[in-house]
Structures are given as structure tokens and as C-alpha cells.
Image (cartoon, rainbow, N blue to C red):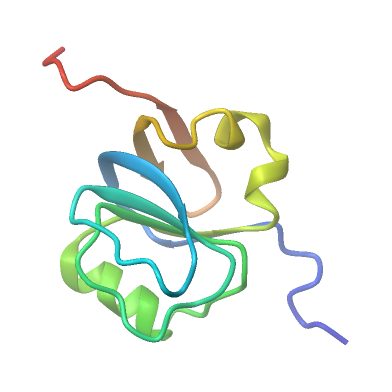
Length: 113
């Protein structure tokens, strides 16, 4: 039985950032300004602007340790593309903030506000 079956969100590294929200496969190479959405945990992860995974991570996972090292937001969100506020922002610049019990995501612009 899945220990984490009842968990739909886990804010692993609380931080905020801006970047281009991209759904990536394990073969894709993200850029430093990308907020990446992965269905699987990548074996290697270069510096990115933020991380969303649809597979559960733990606080000591290599992905979370990288997020802590780089100071970027990192969260597990179950089936994130079924959430309109995320799916509608794919391939757009976003603001992403991770808190322990909730996250904020909205469209952002390149212009200063």
C-alpha cells in the first residue's frame, strides 16, 4: 500500500521564483530559467528556476537537495496537469511560490512590475 496515497501536495523546499513553466521528459535538458514539471524524478538535474514533480519525493531526495542548494522552490503536486491553474500556464512565464501547506502559481511577465 502506498504510504503517501493520501498526500496530494508536499512543499519540500519553501522558496519562490520566476521562470518558464515547462513539462519535461527525462531526456530533455532544462535551462536555468525553467520551472520544470516532471512525471518522474530525473537522475541528474542542472540548475533550474523551480521544480514540480508528480511523483512523490522525500526531503532527502537528490532533487530536493538540489533545490535547497540552489535556493529554488520544489514541490510534489499529484497530477498537476489536471489542475487548470497549472495546465493553463504551461509554456508561459510564471511566478511560483512553495509554502509547506500550499503553493501559489500565476502568470508573470518579463517586464518589471
